[in-house]
Length: 259
Picture (cartoon, rainbow, N blue to C red):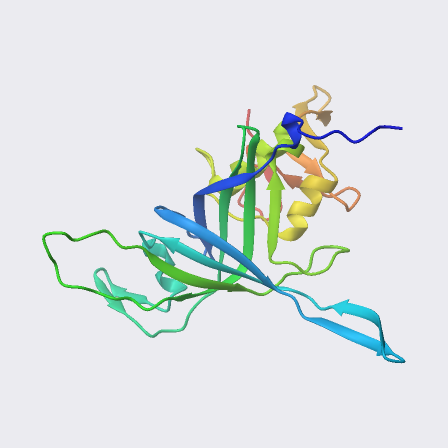
């Protein structure tokens, strides 16, 4: 048996601040969202109560709707697609066009320098607040702008649908955290992107990386090591890791191992 203990340093966790905002568009384009002031999360819970003989017997909570309110000093140019603004030619922007969905990530800090949390937001739609433009004076101040972001949940294997995933760096293996960040922030050889929920389920629930080593017999060996590929939930099927030495050839589905 273990008696509860209070006021331990590891239990004094609190979150503060927001940084490393990134948007991911449907066409593969990604961009940092600089100048973020705040991100306010909210979830709408619908609770239905059932009564029997005048007494409450059951409360049923329906699926929640995950929403964000974001405040920032700047707007990424790449976000125009999601805002319904189309660039006809460079410098010529047409408004009131069809809006596209996008994905979003940001990071919050965990107090006492313990680490941070990475938030992934999927299938988002954005609506800007009213924009007020004032005349220039000798005491002009920099004003921020806010946006409302709504999401449509996606299916995660064997779980309820969700549009918001949180990763806690204090509870993750360092090599898995490094892989996640190399995917969402990019590397010197790969562009940033948001992984699919199925890809995340393979990385975090299976996580069995291999390095491919050439054998003089003409066959390659899989060595348990962070390197080229990782196992998946489907036996015999592997996924390529971010820093793999495998390069796609002209024949679809075939790869060449580069030393």
